[in-house]
Image (tube, rainbow over all chains, first blue to last red; front, side, top):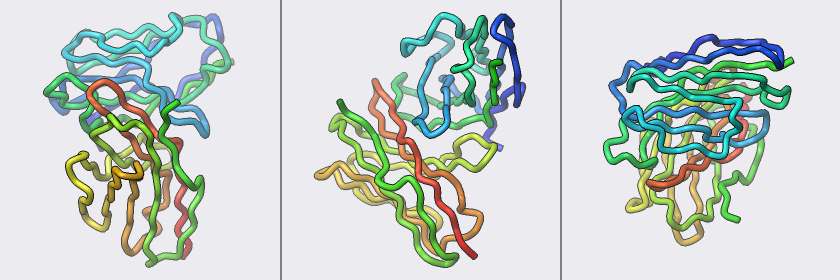
Length: 116
Length: 110
């Protein structure tokens, strides 16, 4: 266990559904991240939160909406997704004392999302 | 454009042999490099890291080598075991950017 948990582990949703992914870290870290992992493609950084403030949004469509109520919890709200959004969504956290990205990230197990 | 990539998408080794997984990067501003291991159904797991002021770092059965001249990173696994079978990928970063390679699948034959 890395100290980063994600729920649910698997999710199947229709294109008109609204769902949320949850991530929680028990490591006392300051930064949290959302990644998308598709088959045979590199990890794609979606969002970065540092001390609860969003510092990165890598051109992610608005149908993905992150929320970070505190340094330990991170959500990804999903709305009107497309089939091509089916992927493994990974959450990570890092201590990030300097606020930059050059820090070791610890990943959760991911949520396997299927959009029908 | 600049990218992070792996030379080999798959690597098969005999149990007990040493494994070498390679990674090329092209962003000269990267100063922090990480190797991750991802087993089926799990998230990436940190293995070892190295900063640009070093060219070698050793862990338990793993060694990372950094050659800044040719922008090359490698992961060496000594006495490879069946439990080492996984996808391995590198990441390069600086304070403003982090990029991941696509991964190499390591298979260990008994």
